[in-house]
Length: 396
Image (tube, rainbow, N blue to C red; front, side, top):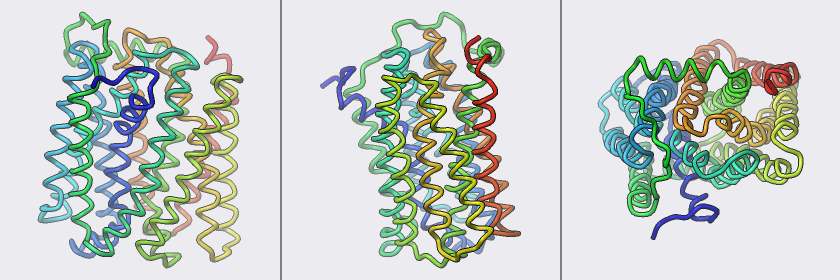
């Protein structure tokens, strides 16, 4: 049965496509300390399995959007799924931390297609606040994955070991691939006549960057996600090693943080219809700055409780739920005929920035746990400042 617009089935499918990346990351987060032990790797080397995943996401997003603008969303999407499934299946058999890092790069290279093309499909089907509302609805459904995955990953690590998380991810990815194959219609009705080449892709990106609003929304999305990824990449070491949480309690703590994100997307669905994209983002960046600032202050005071990390991060993730769907919709709105390319470049900047942040946090945590709250507070504050000082650019 074909999926249809304005149905929960379509929203859920697109949301799960965007959740493929978080599933691939969050499911194995509780196993990072064990992976480091098994491969006799240090914290920074183990963190590279996360940073290279983000790098693979960034590289893949260079090509998926332009290819889908030219050849259609569905065939390009299925090609990405094939690479993702092959790499995911091979990850448990990696003989070294370096091999696992390389396979994670290939896994992300495949997974980047679904997240890019899910956003492009939304732009194919919806416009303006309606697109932003759909992005928020997708975010609500997608948020269940990072809420559940670390908890499931914690139990999986405790009872079956780190390899099982990859086998579970493979099975879930295969099921989603079959849904796309049989149910998702082709939504690109306005295919680009441009031939695909590195030069044509660069020209397309240059055209996007001439738009002031696009640049601003991409920056907001990158800073917002950078703070989130700082927590994703550093929380397992901070909460498990510094605060002494086991794999299962860590999964529960991580899941509770994700509830803040889900709350943000639910609030955004109500706000964006009545108040518009701009006011919704305004409330979001306030949450980003507030959450990061409170976390840094509590850690400096040093209460000794893991709540000094978890509760402020829930405020930050509420801001993520308010900011990111609206920023994506705002960035892609002016580019109906280049939705795939606009989605690709947004993802490229977002993931490249997050990969750099993740690597930096990994190095910083070797020196002091304060690296995590400092990074989150800085990025949340920058996002707030940029939004408040670029109103004219967004309206240009």
